[in-house]
Length: 419
Image (cartoon, rainbow, N blue to C red; front, side, top):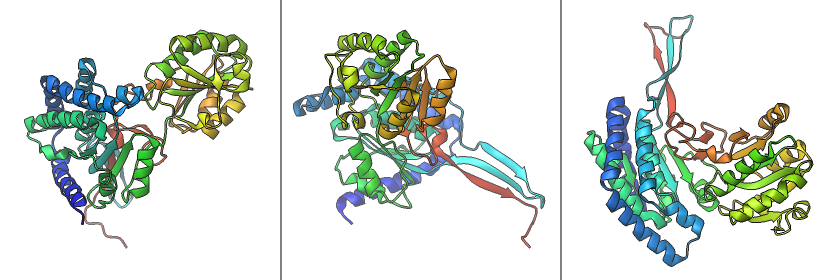
């Protein structure tokens, strides 16, 4: 066994052992730890922001893109948001121990299906340091241990955040090993975590296509993931165009580096001449580059030519693809052919068209008259999220505490034997 694999294995085993303490801890104890962690984040703010400054300096020296730097950056407001999210998770109903079904068979056997923690969750992520605390908080609330592996670009920030979270665990009498951040960022740590069958129960990769592909290709334990965030907004013939403009600007420009940000705008040919010139001006004010189909460029002269690859790309910046479609059927065909089954929206006053869109689009989150930016655990009322799943088994969409549980059957008898 290599030295790195041995180190990862030792850390994961310690986290697995500590996870049992979380699974058996009372709701009040876990909630107390979350509140203490939030307070520690506030107390340690200067230390955390100093660590973030080191990471930002390295990012600047390496020439990281603005989108990547924005994902990395913390300030007092963002740090307070992280602390508030911790407290919000503490206020959520505890899923652990919940009875989801309870029935008695003709032979008198009582069968109970009860929610239980998954066990040890490995979370591999890039750039965004808030994931360190979001993931730790959700795993703690749901009684799971976790091993976190962040990106090298945020190592100082992540270590500082993990240190503060550990303060919260200890304050509630829980083992700090239950939430562990790998203190190194070697690429080999990813396949090492994925190889630990019997120790790690699931892996959740949260990042770009390269990271997710690396995890899926190497993992020997179950993986829950989303492949990309190629999100669409379709402006239908019966759309309120003022509403459509506001939604498009929010979905694309409010935080373009997010996986739920808009990448392709589809516009019904019936309203294109009225909508696209106005939309072009609004996007220009937001310094957003437009890459458009031939028909769209006739109405948006400053737009660049959109390539086939553009429509398959998660830009994660101020770049927007635009295409005119003949109607609902072509819009659905385009989304199903080019999308990533993440988040897609229709803007329309026509309920029949909206219901048809909602039924046909096979995405984790499908919207009617709302921005795709709401695909987020906090916005769904989950407090935070471990990640967003576009898979079809176990979890789909934002993953909160309920998605971090599984179940077991408890069977109560009075001496029954099978004949």
